[in-house]
Each structure stands twice: as structure tokens, then as C-alpha cells.
Length: 356
Image 1: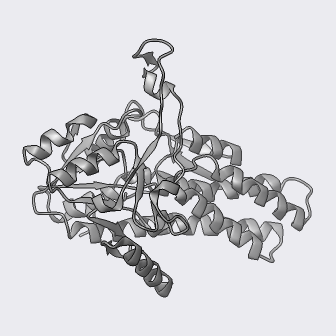
Image 2: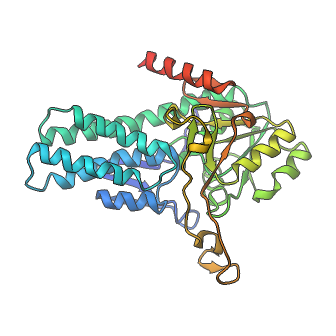
């Protein structure tokens, strides 16, 4: 049985990228049309679109937007390709931790370098590839959901952190894709959502989309997970990922590491749900994953209001790294990877390349 979400986060429509503006949820639910490459850079940087898979697709769309702009200049084919490639690294720099963005941009770059087409046909090839990646993301998430649903106990309460749902992907979700697939089989499934300071993605986004899809959700603050695990009220944890090292160490929204430690102490299974495109095999361990540092105002302000004394010192890393030994399994589109992750990740990529 397939669960059908009502949300479509990003879509290529008539030469523009149409995305849900996630900065205004839950107060508004609206789409914005991104018409230029620089607009897409800003949309990614300012988290109008966010979530590793979603910003990967946004990156692929952004390349097409830059290509459309450059096509209006009087450039030779080689000048066009050279200038377009210059835009790639800039676009990828908008969010440095999420490897899906770099992955998607590199997919487009490889196409540009390989293509022998004229400018018009090359833009069509880039557009077709962006749409292909967009549609593949939906199918990949549904496959992850199906695999992940096999480890969800009947009647389970699942804790999640941040938002790894339809709003973080094209339409279905990674961690919440697992929830959706499990709920389709067993409508007694429930979710506990951490609020996820400082940007409250759990409170604003996860509760919003689960409520929209009719899945029972309870909002808790970030420090409450241990309390509920100790009472036996949480059966498993499932979160997304922004980058996974080749040994299984996983970068996800700040606070994930804390949840993993508490889950380990209480013998609560802790799962990561992420596509293979989130795994960076060039990085040996989590200590090499770059961690984005975001604005201090995200911590010192809520809804534009100051919540602390002026000039207080603030540190605001957007992500932390959960060591692989705290992770029960990594749910991917080719199955659930188990420790030792160095071996299972290698085998997963071999299987993926074989299927291609």
C-alpha cells in the first residue's frame, strides 16, 4: 500500500523552479517562483528551500536557470560552457554541509563537459536531467519508506528530529517517508517531533506536514526525549541526514547527536534514512565533514524578538555528527545498511552501480 502525500516541495514548471517557501510555514503555505540562478542561490542559502535532497534538486534547477540566463548573451558554445561551469561551485557553496547539493550540481557539470550539443540543445539536456533527478527523488524516497517500514514495530511511536519529510525532499520524505510507508500499513503509528531549535523545523514543518497528511504527531521540546524514552513511550528514532561519511558517521541537524546518545542508553533503535547520494565516500569519518556556522540571530531571536541580553556570546553550528556506533541502521533505496558500515556502504554502492 502506497501513502500519497499532499505536498510537492519543488517542481520545474515552464522554465522556472516552483518551490514551497518554508520560511513562512506554518503561518502561510505558499509557492514562490525562482527565475534566476542567483535567486536560487539565495533561496538555498536563506532556507526558503531546505533539506538535503530538496536542495540537491534545487541545485540541479539552479544550473538550468543560470544556463537560460547565459544563453541570452552573445556567447560562443565554448564560452557558454566555460561561464556556466564557473557558476557551479558558487551555487554549491550556498549550503556546504549537505552533500546532495554538490552531488546534483556535479551531475549537471558532468553533462555539460560531456555534451557536444549546441547551446539550445544543451539547455534542454540540462532541463531533462533536472526533471529526471526530481522524479527519481520521489521514487527513491518511496523505496526507502518501504524498506524502513519493515523495522517499525506495530503500533510504534517514532521520535524524529528536525524535518526529514516531504518538505525536505521533492514530495515524500526520508525519515518521514519511513513514517508514511509504515502508517499506510498500520494506522496506529504515531510520531513524536522534537521542536528543533534554533529554527524550529520540527515544530514548524514536521508537525505541519504530518497534520496535513493525517498522521498523529506530538510536539516536544529538544530536551524531553530522555524523559519519554525512560517512560517507555518511544519505540524507535528515525532521522534524516545531510552528509554521511564512508564509515557511517552522520551529520544531521544540531541536536541529533544528543538524541542518539539518549537512545543508546535506553536501548531504543536509532535509524538514519537517507539516499545513497547523501553518502560521501570521499570522506573517511565524520571529523572531516564541514559544519556550517549560521547567523547568531537564529539563536538570540525568535520571531524577530530578542530572547537574551545584548552582546551575549553565541555559537551556532547548524549540524552535529553522530558516530556510527550509535546508529542501528542506515535506510537507503537499496536496503537497510548495518554495521560495519564501511563494508555495507561499499556493498550498497556496488549494488547501486550494478542496477544502473
